Image (cartoon, rainbow, N blue to C red):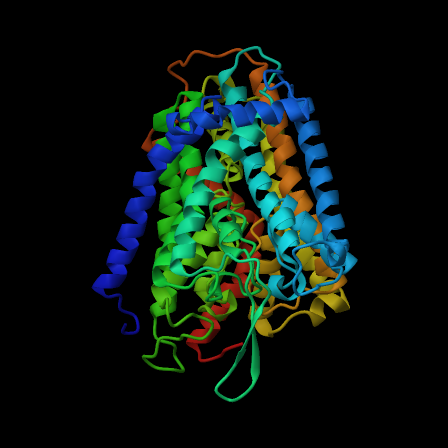
Length: 568
């Protein structure tokens, strides 16, 4: 590759990726919509007895309808129990089987942070898996939560869709049924297939103790093994992102080949993209869903293009050289930049390169992707219902401009719905800004910064943006092991997850209780270019008003100073 120039192979790589993403979204969306309606695909109907057995063993009546309060309360209790179980497993793992390296108890603060992280689908890693967690903790603790937290995203999306479709209704479906069906008929089959392919590519899937090798210099080297492939499959498909190893997908055992790199990048966006089209089928508005999908795709392609331009522009102090610091030589610049954008738009958080080593604007774009609220594809289900909150604000603004009560998919949007949407959109923003303020006001927060100047602001903003928006990726130069990031970060992750889910469920409950309103000449069509422009503008306005000053003083300023030859 020549600096500043992409060759034919690079263009082909990107075109193939984007084409596969768009093509796969339709069939996957059809699959997801069918499952959330209660009907598994034909080739998985042999699992129906398993589903029924789960309900019988758990004492669940899947046909029982839940109002939004009961649905939300059940969801919260479920997460609380999962949190307690995961903390306990980490604290007693020294006494658990499948721990060939005899790892002891995880420190309490790290155990709590990790449990919150995986329960909230954030997967922020304050630990190094191969150096502190046994196989049972990885599989039965973190791996299980990878499935369940992703399935909860599907469940909330399904509840929101029912709220829009149902008329004068009190129920939003059954949380347990949504959870079981999403896991059994979507996440498990896809993860099994991907895990098998990853094993074929060289990803370990073993219960053997770590191997020991002797290097050419005569030193002893420990080779960490373990049941990695199964967790890596769901971490990507479930937009979780927590790596089996500390350096995540930059580790050659997690991501051994260029094909595994392409496949995992695709897996990050496959289900979030499909969720948009599944939502369109669930609410009977497929053209509207494609418009929303198009808005997401435009934002993603624009972010990717700006990142590539910034990364491939010759460094003023290195001349024509492509800066490979922090990147894997076996992947190169273009796949690394593609991964960075995929993982930050999709609330995934896995990394195959150090984002702190990207050009200032490329790192800033990854940060901006998260600060948008993880609604450009976003997490499984969560990206879609976060985008719906933004859509509610967009149609409300349109209603203000024409002087009439706004409508969305046949339901009037009134004061309560607008308030809930505003809360869902702004709560993560508040968590980010308060976290950044605490970092610079406290000694521990300032001491954790690894660089100076605007880069320091970027890395702090990135950490809180990642935690509060449930992304989980790390910039790479911040020492986030102190109490502020351990305990404060856990709070930010909880706020970012449930501060969005609860208003969305309240919004769904309110919409379900309303009667349908027939469209009229004053109804804003939500399936055309005008609506797409309005939605895109609303997203940019909310993000700009909230985060533009921080971005200007962070990555934008660093980019300008880089042009003058200054680095940080």
